[in-house]
Image (cartoon, rainbow, N blue to C red; front, side, top):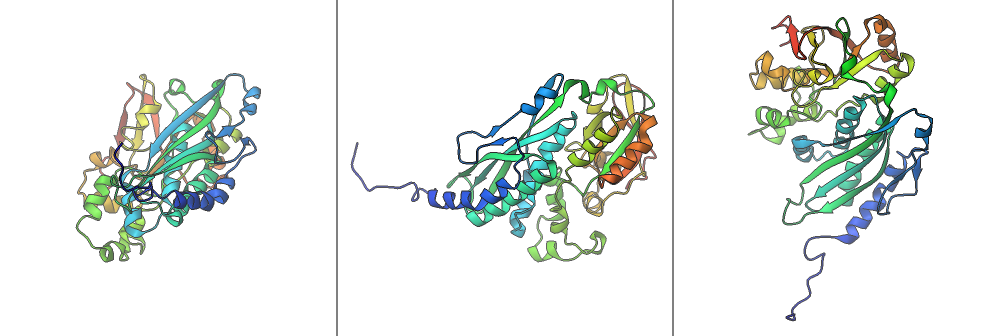
Length: 357
């Protein structure tokens, strides 16, 4: 091998010492999410979690989900506010596995950065920790990867992986949905984490930081960027409270993500029924309406792009509606009766067209 000047890892752009400082900075956050089932501590080659609770189940099933936050991260980077996107990350994974009726158990994250900054990393992980606390799951591991020369120094990307458990006899199943069942919507906090390529294009593109942070009356005095950064709601506590207080009330769940109500609610149906959604039966959040108007979206297009104010839909036995609504209220959920199930072919249909936007 030809002798030459030594080039260290740090000189190549990877700061191992800053990585160690970042790990020290997040230890307290990680520990704050631990459930009793966590074995060991961060720093090993794998996270350990006891599944002893499964021994009390008739037929335990592990449920897994993975996702990211997408281009919403660009707004966090624009504002220099990194402590909420971690909530989005956990929400996208935990809400998905919740749709089976599963209890989230543990979570792992992957953070890729252009240049590692221990302070910014602690802010990002603080949001992940908060999301895990809201979902009732433990953050048992993860990875921080520096990508000099591949990503800009201030750029980062997030992905996550959540594992939960459900007893097969209690698993929510679209096959159980029947004509006459009711659609109960759990309200969203805004756009959540979907449709941001469009939202950024029509709300932020070509505008200065001063313009996108200026208060807007239609957004309750918030700036557009701030309103777009509102974190995704995590529905675990509310839904599991309903499952505990009203056993067998929920037939199926739909997490309303990319594709909107049109292309997500149908995933909770079998091919013998349709979901009939009554438009105008709930209020559209200001930032959702603002974005739809900025994009000049038709109502039809909006319903297959954004959640339109409904983050999760419970399909329930109609005889349990009163009990389900009370249980949701006890858990702090805002609910609306948004429609019903009819005989059909597994699609979503709408009534009162023109009353949503």
